[in-house]
Image (tube, rainbow, N blue to C red; front, side, top):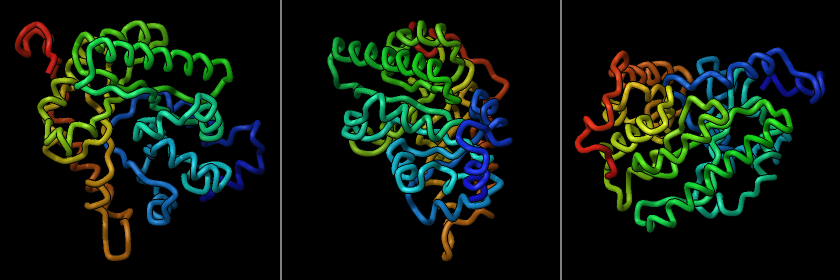
Amino acid sequence: MSSHAESQELGRGQQTLHEAVNSHRIYEPIRGVHPRIELPDEEFEEWLDGNQEIEYVVVNFTDAKEAIERDGDLSQVLEPWHIPVILGTEYDEAVNARTLQDVLDVLAIAQPAIYVPDVVYSYNWMEDEIQENALEAYTGHVRTLQELVIEENLDVRLLPTNKGWTYEHFLEYRELFEEFDYDEFAFYAVQYTGGDAGNAINVLRSHVRNSIAAIDMENVFLIGRLAEDDLLDFAPRVRGATGLRQWTDACSTESGLSQRLWPAFQEGREAKLTVNDGQEQRPVNEFGGTKEDN
């Protein structure tokens, strides 16, 4: 990757041209379809090398941390024009073991970057009081982290994610969104497929609509959904998506992942995602009843 030597030459205190540009780009909403990758991994790293078709690179926090521990930063993995979108959403064990300082340490090195914070777990089998505590813990965590990002002057945009599913749950985010002028929401959708969930795509769409109706954010970034049929029929404010399995299956060849096959995959999936562009989300009471809570 070309950025490592350039960054070393300028020193950590000075930005490269690409870093200066990315410092502005991270505050734009994530539109379109983007790849989620795994690190450290030779095949993914080779696919990213020199890849000019990629804008955002979505990676789990643990993977980003391991790459940084191996290389010192992310410049051996990402090109200067790639923007890392780091997902705190991982297995409960990884999230529970992560400290606030762990997060700040990684973000300080990965910047300019977008970070999806995660803390505590939230499941629909939990009692109401426990769920309310989880929501309070999550919004409190994001607020504390945002204040530290501002205090330490990090080039990092926080992108909150879902810790609930009902309209009332998402109302708990309103104060946080108003306080920091957030206009984008990351909806983690992995748990809606597999295991006991089945293929609950209609439930997922319903929960996404609940979040939009309650918080009234302009943009939703969908995490863990890139199947063609799954991208259809979401609310029009769902403007971005990422996933892993679908694009790697589509771009796999005998010699490894193909950069050449990515643009056609991206274009096809974005066509599905934008089917509802230009429509307005209907009022929440039009979905049946006054609020959706499934």
